[in-house]
Amino acid sequence: MKAIVTVIGKDTVGIIANVCSILAQNGVNVLDISQTVMREYFTMIMLVDTSGCKVDFSALSDILKKDGQDHGLDIRIQREDIFEAMHRI
Amino acid sequence: MITTNEILETIDMISQQHLDIRTVTMGISLRDCGHPDVNTCCDKIYDKITKLAEKLVKTGEDIEREFGIPIVNKRVSVTPIAIACECCDTEDYTPFALALDRAAKEIGVNFIGGFSALVQKGFTVGDRRLIASIPEALAKTERVCSSVNVASTKAGINMDAVALMGRIIKRTAEMTNGQGCAKLVVFANAVEDNPFMAGAFHGVGEPECVINVGVSGPGVVHSALTKCKGQPFHVVAETIKKTAFRITRMGELVAHEASRRLGVPFGIVDLSLAPTPAVGDSVADILEEMGLESVGAPGTTAALALLNDAVKKGGVMASSNVGGLSGAFIPVSEDAGMIRAAESGKLTIEKLEAMTCVCSVGLDMIALPGDTTAETISAIIADESAIGMINQKTTAVRVIPVPGMKVGDRLDFGGLLGSAPIMAVNPASPRVFIDRGGRIPAPLNSLKN
Image 1 (spheres, one colour):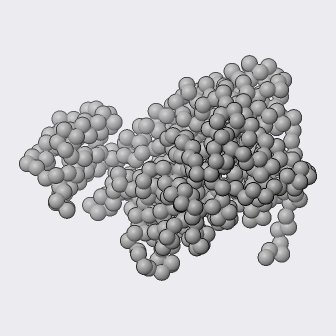
Image 2: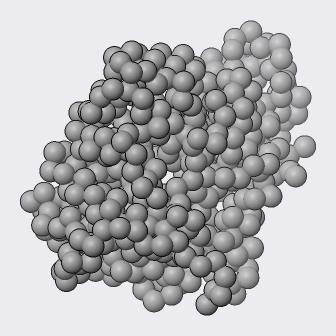
Image 3: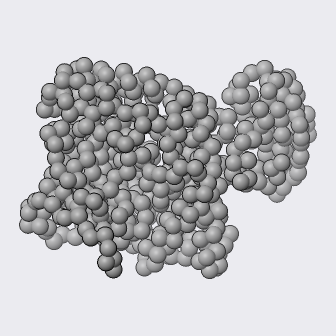
């Protein structure tokens, strides 16, 4: 199952490394990654494949959210379907 | 691949503009739960609801987390109890409400709708018993919602029921200090698949069990309109349509996902703009964004008509099955902008009545002075029913005559129900009119001018 990870917050050293290592530890494969700094905010979007994920989706979501809170970032993981539904006919 | 901007736009809608799925409502038929013995009947109701809806809340929460979209409410609607329990040998229908309340608590839903009767043409024995039990049922339960349909375009207006409901609303207010009236709706042309409370019930033409979803997003529409300041109305309408399309697509996705996971057929998506008391989640704000100084100003009805129509046009293409109430809601207590306008005297009940001609649903969550008579409430119901009957639309009245309060006071409901400023009512008496009783005949459906 494909999902989108978004990381939004103040730019600091090691954000990408940190999120990628959490994903790797949980068996999530990163398919695509893009990042930009918009209005002083670091914005990273990753397309990931969770089919090999070792924990269930909710647990992974909690891990990422908690890590985001620890680092002053807003980290979300959402199934790709929601974006497809909203923006593609 | 979805673009970065599209992803960020969706996240912004959810995190900043209060986009959410307002309710996933499971409709459950109780037509097989009737039994002459009241206790057996209550047990059958409790068992059926807790069995079918056992996983409703958990499933809703799972979807919420996986898609990252809040599902604010998980609810249950049931066959109108006056129909489901009519064969039961009891005068007092309160035990059925208590059974519904217990079931709602067991499965973890915050409201359960269907303590209802459909009396647009007349009363059966069960209808009368149910209506007489409403005040006590609402006083003794926490999560049960009640509704009574008193009129329809095909049947006319049952003025005996209108008169009776005025008294029932007064009695409910007295027994619950007003709070119970927030869970009591009087309808004209009630729909059978409405997922929104307090008026949800599972109609007799519905299947055994069904999933209906209500979407929301006044904040998203408002935000979209801030980007077309000074533009002509066709631009406004187009913007609302596009926004409604996106909101509804999300509702459709969630509805099918919930239906699949629960193994229950998908019913409809209700395309409603339902405000909440949260700042930035207001229908009034949308109308004001169109250029009105305050909701209630001349022009409000036209603005609302545009909004309501554009929401439907945008939403209809986004869902395979649209139903329910589908339109903009204007509950005063649940909308920060409406509260503000009502408190400043710019929004009156008369203007709200005019607004109900062009939107769903009706005079909703309006607190009235404690000395408002039952006849006046009945007459307000009669007016709203007439609007629904003639215009072939659903209208409703959910008013709260708050004991001991007068114009200028404010009643706090807490949570999603918000708080309501007490609004002034025309003091002229409709008593002789209401005392007539009988039926207002069904209207002509041609020669329409």
